[in-house]
Length: 432
Image 1 (tube, rainbow, N blue to C red):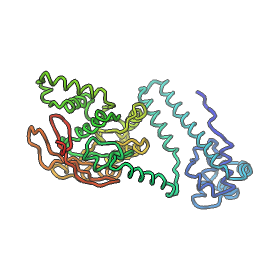
Image 2: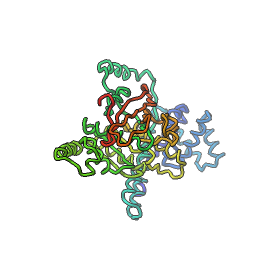
Image 3: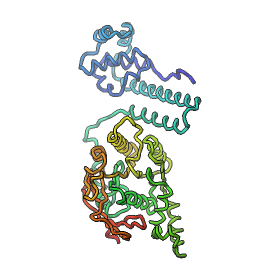
Image 4: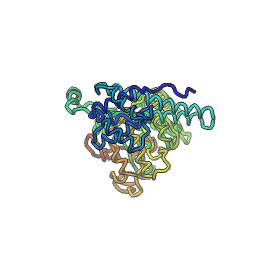
Protein backbone atom coordinates (compact mmCIF):
# COMPACT_ATOMS: atom_id res chain seq x y z
CA UNK A 1 0.00 0.00 0.00
CA UNK A 2 1.09 3.63 -0.49
CA UNK A 3 3.01 4.75 2.61
CA UNK A 4 2.17 8.42 2.18
CA UNK A 5 -1.02 9.17 0.27
CA UNK A 6 -0.52 12.95 0.63
CA UNK A 7 -3.13 13.64 3.30
CA UNK A 8 -1.50 16.79 4.69
CA UNK A 9 -1.16 20.48 3.96
CA UNK A 10 1.91 22.00 5.59
CA UNK A 11 1.08 25.52 4.38
CA UNK A 12 -2.38 25.39 5.99
CA UNK A 13 -0.78 24.23 9.25
CA UNK A 14 1.65 27.15 9.14
CA UNK A 15 -1.20 29.53 8.37
CA UNK A 16 -3.03 28.46 11.54
CA UNK A 17 0.05 29.01 13.67
CA UNK A 18 0.81 32.33 11.93
CA UNK A 19 -2.79 33.50 12.52
CA UNK A 20 -2.42 32.91 16.26
CA UNK A 21 0.89 34.82 16.35
CA UNK A 22 -0.80 37.73 14.56
CA UNK A 23 -3.97 37.61 16.68
CA UNK A 24 -3.76 35.71 19.97
CA UNK A 25 -7.53 35.92 20.52
CA UNK A 26 -8.32 33.62 17.60
CA UNK A 27 -6.88 30.59 19.41
CA UNK A 28 -9.83 30.62 21.81
CA UNK A 29 -12.18 30.08 18.85
CA UNK A 30 -10.23 27.16 17.36
CA UNK A 31 -8.50 25.58 20.36
CA UNK A 32 -11.20 22.94 20.94
CA UNK A 33 -11.14 21.91 17.27
CA UNK A 34 -7.48 20.95 16.95
CA UNK A 35 -5.22 18.43 18.64
CA UNK A 36 -1.43 18.36 18.23
CA UNK A 37 -1.83 15.05 16.36
CA UNK A 38 -3.94 16.85 13.72
CA UNK A 39 -0.73 18.50 12.52
CA UNK A 40 1.29 16.36 10.11
CA UNK A 41 4.57 18.27 10.52
CA UNK A 42 6.15 17.44 13.89
CA UNK A 43 7.45 21.01 14.42
CA UNK A 44 3.95 22.39 13.83
CA UNK A 45 2.46 19.91 16.31
CA UNK A 46 4.99 20.95 18.96
CA UNK A 47 4.33 24.65 18.32
CA UNK A 48 0.58 24.07 18.65
CA UNK A 49 1.17 22.40 22.03
CA UNK A 50 3.17 25.44 23.15
CA UNK A 51 0.44 27.81 21.92
CA UNK A 52 -2.34 25.90 23.71
CA UNK A 53 -0.33 25.75 26.94
CA UNK A 54 0.12 29.51 26.92
CA UNK A 55 -3.52 30.14 25.98
CA UNK A 56 -4.75 28.06 28.92
CA UNK A 57 -2.67 30.23 31.26
CA UNK A 58 -3.72 33.42 29.45
CA UNK A 59 -0.08 34.15 28.65
CA UNK A 60 0.92 36.11 25.52
CA UNK A 61 1.78 34.09 22.40
CA UNK A 62 4.47 35.91 20.45
CA UNK A 63 7.89 35.25 18.90
CA UNK A 64 9.83 36.00 22.07
CA UNK A 65 7.68 33.88 24.44
CA UNK A 66 7.46 30.98 21.97
CA UNK A 67 11.22 30.85 21.32
CA UNK A 68 11.80 31.02 25.08
CA UNK A 69 9.55 27.96 25.55
CA UNK A 70 11.37 26.12 22.74
CA UNK A 71 14.69 26.67 24.54
CA UNK A 72 13.48 25.96 28.08
CA UNK A 73 11.54 22.81 27.14
CA UNK A 74 14.19 21.46 24.79
CA UNK A 75 12.06 21.36 21.63
CA UNK A 76 14.21 20.83 18.55
CA UNK A 77 12.63 23.58 16.47
CA UNK A 78 14.76 25.98 14.43
CA UNK A 79 14.13 29.58 15.51
CA UNK A 80 14.20 30.69 11.87
CA UNK A 81 11.28 28.32 11.22
CA UNK A 82 9.21 30.19 13.81
CA UNK A 83 10.18 33.55 12.30
CA UNK A 84 9.14 32.25 8.90
CA UNK A 85 5.70 31.27 10.24
CA UNK A 86 5.19 34.67 11.85
CA UNK A 87 5.90 36.40 8.54
CA UNK A 88 3.67 34.08 6.44
CA UNK A 89 0.30 35.47 7.58
CA UNK A 90 -0.83 39.06 8.05
CA UNK A 91 -4.38 38.47 9.30
CA UNK A 92 -6.36 35.85 11.23
CA UNK A 93 -9.45 36.42 9.08
CA UNK A 94 -9.16 33.05 7.27
CA UNK A 95 -8.08 30.90 10.21
CA UNK A 96 -11.36 28.88 10.23
CA UNK A 97 -10.76 27.93 6.61
CA UNK A 98 -7.25 26.71 7.40
CA UNK A 99 -8.58 24.72 10.38
CA UNK A 100 -11.09 22.91 8.15
CA UNK A 101 -8.31 21.94 5.75
CA UNK A 102 -6.04 20.59 8.49
CA UNK A 103 -8.89 18.69 10.21
CA UNK A 104 -9.97 17.12 6.92
CA UNK A 105 -6.42 15.93 6.20
CA UNK A 106 -6.06 14.56 9.75
CA UNK A 107 -9.30 12.56 9.49
CA UNK A 108 -8.24 11.14 6.13
CA UNK A 109 -4.84 10.11 7.55
CA UNK A 110 -6.53 8.33 10.43
CA UNK A 111 -8.98 6.58 8.10
CA UNK A 112 -6.06 5.54 5.91
CA UNK A 113 -4.27 4.13 8.96
CA UNK A 114 -7.20 1.99 10.17
CA UNK A 115 -7.89 0.76 6.63
CA UNK A 116 -4.24 -0.21 6.28
CA UNK A 117 -4.45 -2.10 9.59
CA UNK A 118 -7.59 -3.92 8.41
CA UNK A 119 -5.89 -4.79 5.12
CA UNK A 120 -2.95 -6.23 7.06
CA UNK A 121 -5.31 -8.31 9.20
CA UNK A 122 -6.98 -9.60 6.04
CA UNK A 123 -3.64 -10.60 4.49
CA UNK A 124 -2.40 -12.32 7.65
CA UNK A 125 -5.70 -14.19 7.99
CA UNK A 126 -5.55 -14.41 11.80
CA UNK A 127 -8.93 -12.75 12.42
CA UNK A 128 -12.41 -13.71 11.20
CA UNK A 129 -13.69 -11.40 8.49
CA UNK A 130 -16.71 -10.29 10.52
CA UNK A 131 -14.43 -9.28 13.42
CA UNK A 132 -12.29 -7.18 11.07
CA UNK A 133 -15.42 -5.54 9.64
CA UNK A 134 -16.79 -4.75 13.13
CA UNK A 135 -13.43 -3.34 14.25
CA UNK A 136 -13.27 -1.18 11.15
CA UNK A 137 -16.79 0.18 11.64
CA UNK A 138 -16.23 0.89 15.33
CA UNK A 139 -12.93 2.69 14.74
CA UNK A 140 -14.40 4.73 11.89
CA UNK A 141 -17.31 5.68 14.16
CA UNK A 142 -14.88 6.68 16.91
CA UNK A 143 -13.04 8.93 14.46
CA UNK A 144 -16.27 10.62 13.44
CA UNK A 145 -17.35 11.10 17.07
CA UNK A 146 -13.99 12.40 18.29
CA UNK A 147 -13.88 14.97 15.50
CA UNK A 148 -17.32 16.41 16.11
CA UNK A 149 -17.04 20.06 17.11
CA UNK A 150 -19.44 21.49 19.63
CA UNK A 151 -21.24 24.71 18.81
CA UNK A 152 -23.39 27.18 20.65
CA UNK A 153 -26.12 29.60 19.65
CA UNK A 154 -27.97 32.45 21.29
CA UNK A 155 -31.08 30.90 22.82
CA UNK A 156 -33.31 33.43 21.10
CA UNK A 157 -32.43 31.98 17.71
CA UNK A 158 -34.30 28.79 18.65
CA UNK A 159 -37.57 30.65 19.23
CA UNK A 160 -38.93 30.29 15.65
CA UNK A 161 -38.81 26.47 15.92
CA UNK A 162 -40.44 26.60 19.36
CA UNK A 163 -43.22 28.89 18.14
CA UNK A 164 -43.85 26.58 15.17
CA UNK A 165 -44.17 23.65 17.58
CA UNK A 166 -46.67 25.54 19.70
CA UNK A 167 -48.70 26.37 16.60
CA UNK A 168 -48.63 22.71 15.57
CA UNK A 169 -49.91 21.64 19.00
CA UNK A 170 -52.86 24.05 18.67
CA UNK A 171 -53.65 22.99 15.11
CA UNK A 172 -53.52 19.28 16.03
CA UNK A 173 -55.14 18.98 19.46
CA UNK A 174 -54.81 15.59 21.18
CA UNK A 175 -52.57 14.29 18.36
CA UNK A 176 -49.67 12.05 19.34
CA UNK A 177 -46.33 13.83 19.25
CA UNK A 178 -44.41 10.61 18.62
CA UNK A 179 -44.85 6.96 17.75
CA UNK A 180 -47.83 5.14 19.30
CA UNK A 181 -47.03 2.53 21.92
CA UNK A 182 -49.80 0.12 20.94
CA UNK A 183 -51.67 0.96 24.14
CA UNK A 184 -54.14 3.83 24.32
CA UNK A 185 -53.60 4.23 28.07
CA UNK A 186 -49.83 4.58 27.61
CA UNK A 187 -50.25 7.06 24.76
CA UNK A 188 -52.54 9.16 26.97
CA UNK A 189 -49.77 9.64 29.51
CA UNK A 190 -46.80 9.87 27.09
CA UNK A 191 -48.34 11.54 24.06
CA UNK A 192 -46.36 9.04 22.01
CA UNK A 193 -42.76 7.80 22.07
CA UNK A 194 -40.69 10.62 20.62
CA UNK A 195 -37.49 10.73 18.61
CA UNK A 196 -34.45 10.30 20.87
CA UNK A 197 -36.54 8.88 23.78
CA UNK A 198 -34.66 6.27 25.78
CA UNK A 199 -37.33 4.16 27.51
CA UNK A 200 -36.73 1.58 30.24
CA UNK A 201 -39.26 -1.12 31.14
CA UNK A 202 -38.32 -2.82 34.41
CA UNK A 203 -39.78 -5.73 36.36
CA UNK A 204 -38.86 -8.79 38.35
CA UNK A 205 -38.60 -12.12 36.44
CA UNK A 206 -41.83 -13.73 35.15
CA UNK A 207 -43.96 -10.58 35.42
CA UNK A 208 -44.17 -10.21 31.66
CA UNK A 209 -41.48 -7.76 30.45
CA UNK A 210 -40.82 -9.62 27.21
CA UNK A 211 -44.55 -10.12 26.56
CA UNK A 212 -45.15 -6.41 27.14
CA UNK A 213 -42.38 -5.49 24.74
CA UNK A 214 -43.73 -7.91 22.13
CA UNK A 215 -47.26 -6.54 22.50
CA UNK A 216 -45.83 -3.10 21.75
CA UNK A 217 -43.75 -3.96 18.69
CA UNK A 218 -46.41 -6.29 17.27
CA UNK A 219 -48.99 -3.52 17.47
CA UNK A 220 -46.66 -1.03 15.78
CA UNK A 221 -45.49 -3.33 12.99
CA UNK A 222 -48.52 -5.59 12.35
CA UNK A 223 -51.36 -3.12 12.96
CA UNK A 224 -49.71 0.14 11.85
CA UNK A 225 -47.00 -1.08 9.44
CA UNK A 226 -44.29 0.87 11.30
CA UNK A 227 -40.84 -0.77 10.86
CA UNK A 228 -39.37 -1.92 14.17
CA UNK A 229 -36.01 -3.39 15.15
CA UNK A 230 -35.81 -6.06 17.87
CA UNK A 231 -32.66 -7.20 19.68
CA UNK A 232 -33.50 -10.34 21.65
CA UNK A 233 -30.49 -11.32 23.74
CA UNK A 234 -32.50 -13.80 25.81
CA UNK A 235 -35.10 -15.47 23.57
CA UNK A 236 -34.53 -16.92 20.12
CA UNK A 237 -36.34 -15.52 17.11
CA UNK A 238 -38.20 -18.84 16.84
CA UNK A 239 -39.56 -18.48 20.38
CA UNK A 240 -40.68 -14.91 19.68
CA UNK A 241 -42.32 -16.01 16.44
CA UNK A 242 -44.19 -18.75 18.29
CA UNK A 243 -45.49 -16.25 20.85
CA UNK A 244 -46.65 -13.99 18.05
CA UNK A 245 -48.78 -16.77 16.62
CA UNK A 246 -50.40 -17.40 20.04
CA UNK A 247 -51.10 -13.71 20.52
CA UNK A 248 -52.32 -12.92 17.01
CA UNK A 249 -54.45 -16.00 16.48
CA UNK A 250 -56.12 -15.76 19.89
CA UNK A 251 -55.55 -19.50 20.36
CA UNK A 252 -53.87 -20.49 23.61
CA UNK A 253 -50.33 -21.82 23.59
CA UNK A 254 -51.50 -24.88 25.53
CA UNK A 255 -54.02 -25.85 22.85
CA UNK A 256 -51.51 -25.32 20.03
CA UNK A 257 -48.64 -27.14 21.77
CA UNK A 258 -50.81 -30.08 22.80
CA UNK A 259 -52.01 -30.47 19.19
CA UNK A 260 -55.68 -29.95 20.10
CA UNK A 261 -56.64 -27.62 17.26
CA UNK A 262 -60.14 -27.63 15.83
CA UNK A 263 -60.46 -27.42 12.01
CA UNK A 264 -61.75 -23.81 12.18
CA UNK A 265 -58.70 -22.73 14.20
CA UNK A 266 -56.25 -23.57 11.43
CA UNK A 267 -57.67 -20.65 9.45
CA UNK A 268 -57.03 -18.27 12.34
CA UNK A 269 -53.44 -19.45 12.58
CA UNK A 270 -52.97 -19.06 8.85
CA UNK A 271 -54.36 -15.52 8.99
CA UNK A 272 -52.06 -14.66 11.93
CA UNK A 273 -49.04 -16.06 10.11
CA UNK A 274 -49.84 -14.02 7.00
CA UNK A 275 -49.97 -10.79 9.04
CA UNK A 276 -46.75 -11.63 10.86
CA UNK A 277 -45.00 -12.50 7.60
CA UNK A 278 -45.95 -9.15 6.07
CA UNK A 279 -45.03 -7.10 9.16
CA UNK A 280 -41.83 -4.96 9.02
CA UNK A 281 -40.23 -6.57 12.09
CA UNK A 282 -36.44 -7.03 11.90
CA UNK A 283 -34.88 -9.16 14.62
CA UNK A 284 -31.33 -9.84 15.76
CA UNK A 285 -31.21 -12.61 18.39
CA UNK A 286 -27.43 -12.64 18.92
CA UNK A 287 -26.96 -13.68 22.58
CA UNK A 288 -24.88 -11.28 24.69
CA UNK A 289 -24.46 -9.08 21.64
CA UNK A 290 -21.33 -6.88 21.80
CA UNK A 291 -22.12 -3.16 22.00
CA UNK A 292 -20.24 -2.44 18.75
CA UNK A 293 -22.18 -5.17 16.93
CA UNK A 294 -25.47 -3.80 18.29
CA UNK A 295 -24.63 -0.34 16.94
CA UNK A 296 -23.65 -1.78 13.57
CA UNK A 297 -26.75 -3.97 13.23
CA UNK A 298 -29.09 -1.22 14.47
CA UNK A 299 -27.67 1.35 12.06
CA UNK A 300 -28.11 -1.15 9.23
CA UNK A 301 -31.78 -1.69 10.21
CA UNK A 302 -32.35 2.07 10.26
CA UNK A 303 -30.53 2.70 6.98
CA UNK A 304 -31.75 -0.30 4.96
CA UNK A 305 -35.19 -1.03 6.42
CA UNK A 306 -36.32 2.39 7.65
CA UNK A 307 -36.70 1.18 11.26
CA UNK A 308 -38.37 3.86 13.42
CA UNK A 309 -37.96 2.34 16.90
CA UNK A 310 -35.70 -0.28 18.51
CA UNK A 311 -36.56 -2.76 21.28
CA UNK A 312 -33.92 -4.51 23.41
CA UNK A 313 -34.51 -7.61 25.57
CA UNK A 314 -32.66 -6.88 27.71
CA UNK A 315 -30.17 -4.14 28.61
CA UNK A 316 -27.74 -6.00 30.87
CA UNK A 317 -27.34 -8.85 28.37
CA UNK A 318 -25.45 -6.52 26.02
CA UNK A 319 -21.68 -7.06 26.19
CA UNK A 320 -19.99 -3.76 27.08
CA UNK A 321 -16.68 -5.00 25.54
CA UNK A 322 -14.92 -3.46 28.54
CA UNK A 323 -14.02 -6.44 30.77
CA UNK A 324 -11.78 -4.29 32.97
CA UNK A 325 -14.79 -2.32 34.25
CA UNK A 326 -16.75 -3.36 37.33
CA UNK A 327 -20.30 -4.64 36.82
CA UNK A 328 -22.02 -1.36 37.60
CA UNK A 329 -19.53 0.54 35.44
CA UNK A 330 -20.27 -1.76 32.50
CA UNK A 331 -24.02 -1.17 32.87
CA UNK A 332 -23.37 2.57 33.12
CA UNK A 333 -21.30 2.47 29.93
CA UNK A 334 -23.97 0.48 28.03
CA UNK A 335 -26.77 2.75 29.21
CA UNK A 336 -24.87 5.90 28.24
CA UNK A 337 -24.05 4.48 24.81
CA UNK A 338 -27.70 3.57 24.18
CA UNK A 339 -28.81 7.08 25.10
CA UNK A 340 -26.13 8.55 22.80
CA UNK A 341 -27.32 6.23 20.02
CA UNK A 342 -30.85 7.65 20.36
CA UNK A 343 -29.47 11.19 20.11
CA UNK A 344 -27.30 10.38 17.10
CA UNK A 345 -29.93 8.51 15.06
CA UNK A 346 -33.13 10.24 16.31
CA UNK A 347 -34.57 6.76 16.80
CA UNK A 348 -36.08 5.87 20.20
CA UNK A 349 -35.07 2.76 22.14
CA UNK A 350 -37.22 0.70 24.50
CA UNK A 351 -34.98 -1.50 26.66
CA UNK A 352 -35.97 -4.07 29.27
CA UNK A 353 -34.21 -4.16 32.63
CA UNK A 354 -34.26 -6.47 35.62
CA UNK A 355 -35.06 -5.16 39.08
CA UNK A 356 -33.09 -5.92 42.23
CA UNK A 357 -34.06 -8.97 44.27
CA UNK A 358 -35.19 -6.63 47.07
CA UNK A 359 -38.02 -5.42 44.81
CA UNK A 360 -39.74 -8.84 44.99
CA UNK A 361 -43.20 -8.55 46.51
CA UNK A 362 -43.27 -4.78 46.87
CA UNK A 363 -44.23 -1.82 44.71
CA UNK A 364 -41.10 -0.97 42.69
CA UNK A 365 -39.44 2.43 42.57
CA UNK A 366 -36.46 3.94 40.75
CA UNK A 367 -33.99 2.71 43.37
CA UNK A 368 -34.98 -0.88 42.54
CA UNK A 369 -33.39 -0.76 39.08
CA UNK A 370 -30.21 -2.78 38.88
CA UNK A 371 -27.31 -0.31 38.77
CA UNK A 372 -30.10 2.25 39.23
CA UNK A 373 -27.95 5.39 39.25
CA UNK A 374 -26.75 5.10 35.66
CA UNK A 375 -30.04 3.89 34.15
CA UNK A 376 -32.18 6.36 36.09
CA UNK A 377 -29.97 9.24 34.99
CA UNK A 378 -29.91 8.32 31.28
CA UNK A 379 -33.52 7.24 30.73
CA UNK A 380 -36.14 9.70 29.55
CA UNK A 381 -39.01 7.40 30.53
CA UNK A 382 -39.05 4.57 33.08
CA UNK A 383 -41.90 2.06 33.44
CA UNK A 384 -42.33 -0.75 35.95
CA UNK A 385 -44.63 -3.76 35.62
CA UNK A 386 -46.15 -4.69 38.99
CA UNK A 387 -48.80 -7.00 40.46
CA UNK A 388 -50.35 -6.34 43.83
CA UNK A 389 -50.90 -10.06 44.45
CA UNK A 390 -49.66 -13.36 43.10
CA UNK A 391 -51.90 -14.61 40.27
CA UNK A 392 -53.97 -17.73 40.71
CA UNK A 393 -52.75 -20.90 39.02
CA UNK A 394 -54.15 -21.21 35.47
CA UNK A 395 -55.65 -17.70 35.65
CA UNK A 396 -56.90 -16.60 32.24
CA UNK A 397 -56.46 -12.87 32.98
CA UNK A 398 -53.90 -11.35 35.34
CA UNK A 399 -54.41 -7.75 36.43
CA UNK A 400 -51.13 -5.84 36.12
CA UNK A 401 -50.08 -2.28 36.81
CA UNK A 402 -47.75 -0.34 34.53
CA UNK A 403 -46.16 2.34 36.68
CA UNK A 404 -44.70 5.37 34.89
CA UNK A 405 -42.08 6.29 37.50
CA UNK A 406 -40.21 8.84 35.40
CA UNK A 407 -41.04 10.95 32.38
CA UNK A 408 -38.59 13.72 31.60
CA UNK A 409 -41.13 15.78 29.65
CA UNK A 410 -44.46 14.84 31.15
CA UNK A 411 -46.49 13.43 34.02
CA UNK A 412 -46.07 10.15 35.86
CA UNK A 413 -48.82 7.79 36.96
CA UNK A 414 -50.19 4.24 36.97
CA UNK A 415 -51.90 2.39 34.12
CA UNK A 416 -54.09 -0.69 34.45
CA UNK A 417 -53.38 -3.53 32.04
CA UNK A 418 -54.61 -7.09 31.62
CA UNK A 419 -52.16 -9.89 30.89
CA UNK A 420 -53.32 -13.06 29.11
CA UNK A 421 -50.66 -15.67 29.99
CA UNK A 422 -51.97 -18.33 27.58
CA UNK A 423 -51.87 -15.84 24.71
CA UNK A 424 -48.67 -14.13 25.95
CA UNK A 425 -50.10 -10.66 25.40
CA UNK A 426 -51.10 -7.48 27.23
CA UNK A 427 -54.11 -5.29 26.56
CA UNK A 428 -55.52 -2.07 28.02
CA UNK A 429 -57.76 -3.01 30.95
CA UNK A 430 -60.57 -0.66 29.91
CA UNK A 431 -60.90 -2.31 26.47
CA UNK A 432 -61.65 -5.78 27.85
